[in-house]
Image 1: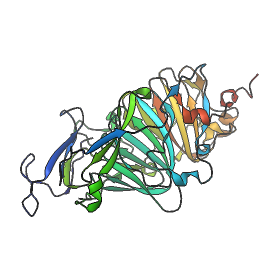
Image 2: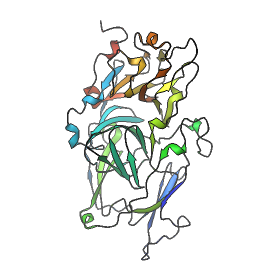
Image 3: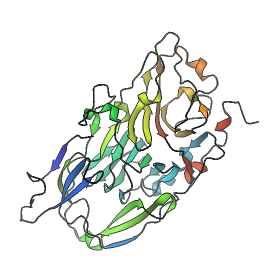
Length: 404
């Protein structure tokens, strides 16, 4: 998505000398995608960005997964993962628990009350949905103020940390990719501009403030720790390391380019509706390699005189469908125990659709007050430890009225 931005102080020409008021050179860093063949930004640091004083292993939480076998749809109650006030001792990075995952994407959930360590995902981009709470995502590019309903898109290898604000917990639904995450290509021109039929556009994106330009301090004598998630020998080929830096990584004085973190709020998504029921791709907001992200927002529904507003039954032959229910009352799931904070997993190979009675109740409806975030994957999802912990064990039988 080529949407050029500039922040702070940069030289007139790239790859040329850039000095501070005392004549000291700044250090230019290229941060780019696909080697040198795609979007990138140039950042100018006070200190050498590759300097490291020490390294150690970061023992990641359990990233192991279990196949969904025998195949069944599932209901997972995410709010049961962190009961009471346990969130007060957790942060939005080290407190993540793996719900579902495969070789392309991993879905984590965290409830945070503490500031996270500085963090960098070196495997792929992250798209983090803020279910509730408020905070600041401090990044090497600048700060992002975030709150309920925000998608926070963070490019691979962006050093950042999550800072909750206020007395309420910060609940985040973290979609971690092994690739880049961007708006659907069909909504973009050949040069990266949003087209007229897109359900959101550049005006809806919130971008970082000016960079912090942190200078040296006495505290840095002990080193600054950055937690890094990277490819390695752990479960799922994922490992963790901690790099101890001699200087704070937020020492950037300026940057420009087309690669940076940004925020998009789900309330700014303009739903595409029709005379008859529209399929899930009409609700797409982002995509990565072998997966898509969609959102179902409050909207007017189908206006054909014989329309059936809830989805028709469908077999996800090529996809596993993960629906995270975050607001309103999802019409197709009434009567199944699904509520705010629920996830449903509908795996490929199983025909799914409205709960019994939902189709009849929807006839004549003109508006649906529902809010959900959906991830569709094109490889089977396996169950993480958090998903297994909050599986209700009975959702698969709800269409039949119970297990025999």
